[in-house]
Length: 102
Image 1 (cartoon, one colour):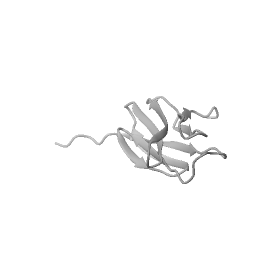
Image 2: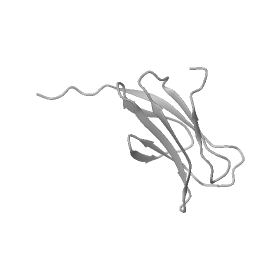
Image 3: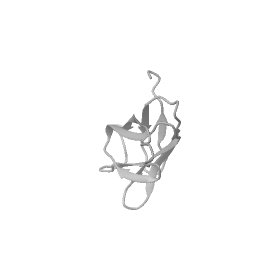
């Protein structure tokens, strides 16, 4: 017998970069379930399990060090829209927020 396929849902992750930064050409890396995946600035969708808490992380990498790191524990009851804001300076942390309109 085969096990039933796990149910999944899609979340919308918006990656925002400040207008004024002290770094250029840097793209974010999204970490879902411990696996890093390169991403681009803007809106993207990601598939996550419906009934499990998933840790969503984002960091920036400039070939020397990682910066802008932020993590968010996405629980089954959370809204499917999350926003990451990158820092202005290349040695500070980023932040997650859930938009109020959801």
